[in-house]
Length: 189
Image (tube, rainbow, N blue to C red):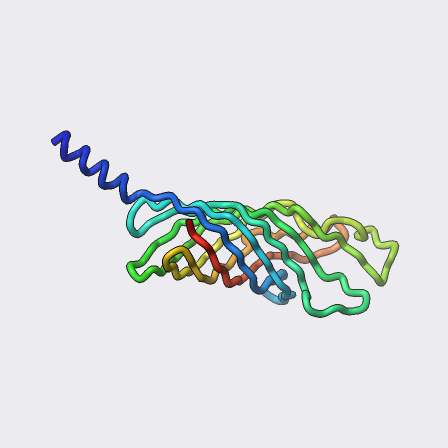
């Protein structure tokens, strides 16, 4: 009996696997509410570490740098478009199919490293001028679908902001939720 339990332990240990990856993603950035969205470009570069604890299940975490630019390809006179940079830490539960497709879902924790500030062109004396636009931290929900082959993976991931991040400073109203939909490519090792 003890020998059988040892064999089962060795067999299950062989199924466990650490996997490292380097990821790059690009896609659409949206900020706003359900009534109105402003769109732009989102770019992300990161490192991932996945632990496969069964044939079909794994957990992935990592760290990534993400930049969001509202209205990345247009400029307007007096415009106050948003630009932000973040460090992200995801914690994603993943399901692997036999066809090399991976479905993921989990929280992502975002720390703002470069916060844009308000600039009210129409009122240079506005008390909002120079104040940060968003909070320094928020939590999002990250669904993903990825196709893996050999050392590469292609996929689509999204981040749905779960928290209102807008800083009103008692001078304005409204809310802001940050969302992204991005295509991604990964090299796994």
